[in-house]
Every structure is written in C-alpha cells, then in structure tokens.
Length: 279
Image (cartoon, rainbow, N blue to C red; front, side, top):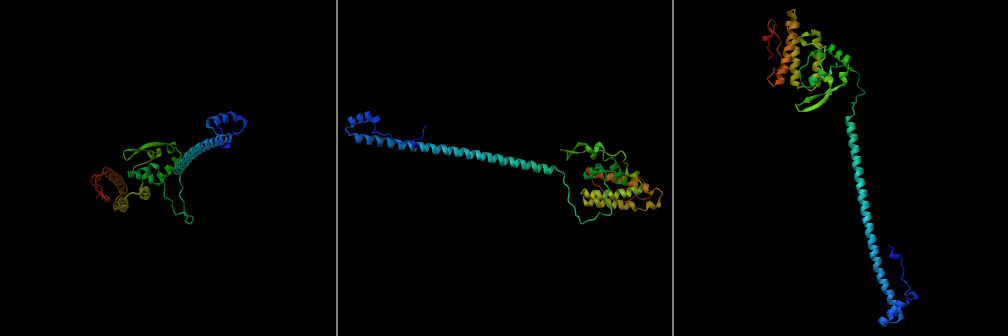
C-alpha cells in the first residue's frame, strides 16, 4: 500500500470532475465554487485521517520490530553469557585436573639427608592407619620400590572402597604387596632400627594421631634399649619377634575398636611369647 503522506489533493476544478460537480450542484443547490471547495475539504479531512492511521500503524510496526530485535539481542546475549560461563567452568575444571607443582623457597639449601620413599602399597597402608611390615621402610625395601617403579602395575588403576560405600580409582601399586617383603622378626636388627625411623617419619606425614605416634616411638625406644639385647645371645631375635607380634596385635585391636595398650612394655628375659604383655 502506497504511503498517503506522498499524495496531493486532486484538482476538483478540472474537467475530469465536471460531471461530479454538476451532480452536486443539482443536489445541493450550491454554486460550482462552493461544490469544488466542499470536495477539497472532504478529501482533505479524509486524507488527514488516513495519514494518521497510516502513521500509527507504521509506528506500531516499528515498535514491534524494535521489541523483536531487543528480544533477539537479549536472547543472543544470554546465549553468549551462558557459553562464556560454560567455557569458564570447563577451563576451571581443566585447571583443577591439571597436576599442580608446589612452589619452593629459593633461599633454602639441600638438607643433610632425604627421607627414603617406600612403596605406594606401604604409603596406602599407613594412610589408612593399617598395619604394614617395617621392611617397606627399610633401605632395602625402598630400593625395591625404585627397581619396580617402571612396572606395568605402577601404571594401572583399580577400584577400592572408601568408607564402605564409595568406590575410587587408585594405582594398582597401592594394592600389590612386594614379593620381596619379609616380616619384622626376619629383619636384621640394624635394618629394623633404620626402618622404624623412616616408618615414624611417614606416619607423622600421614597425620596419625600424635598420641599413637608417641606410643610407637616409646615402644621402639624400649625395644632398642632393653637389657636383653646385651644379656642374651638371642636378645635381638627375641626383641624382633616381640615387635612383630605386639605391633600386629596393636593394629588389630585398633581396627576392631577394642582397647589397645598405650605402649609396649619390653620383653623380660626368660619369659615366653604367650606371657608377654603390652600394658
């Protein structure tokens, strides 16, 4: 439809409208000029109303178009913000999954010694407050870990249950005991002394209760300094057997939730295993 704003009033005085003028003159009794003026006024009034309706319709169309454009722009903005939020979340998730390297103090020097690193199996045991043989914390046990660190078991993963409900993935090395491990009572006494020191260091790192750490420290001190070691040819062997049985029983009692001793009283010379106490 053409825009009425561009239209001009017809020339009602021209010959093209002569018959209409004559009909109006006969019907109204007015003069030709009066009829012509009346036709101009009538057209002008009708045209003005038409123009107003046209303009209102166009304004409404423009408002509708503006609202549609605004709604589309808002929707596009919401989609963009959602995409940015998802991208940021994905970035943060990716950053969380990336391995992190701790910082260091550049002013510190290398220490006099570096703590031995036992097998993941032993670390997993003490992190779960479970019993594990002292051999894993001995120099021989830590060397065995280094030799086997490139095995396929180190690279594999398996499921384990946490708190009796949750299953988590852990390296297979955390479940696999070393075929070279030996019980405490088969260690040499020197190996036992070295292993228990490393063991105490690692249970401290594993956040064991300080009371338990202190009890074990005292337990080992009594064993190391007991007179039977100097008064009997088999004193060291007796101490190691006592250590093996008592420490295992101590862990078993803790695991069962029954009362365990706060520390071990060293074995007395001439007393058999079944008469040893650990009050």
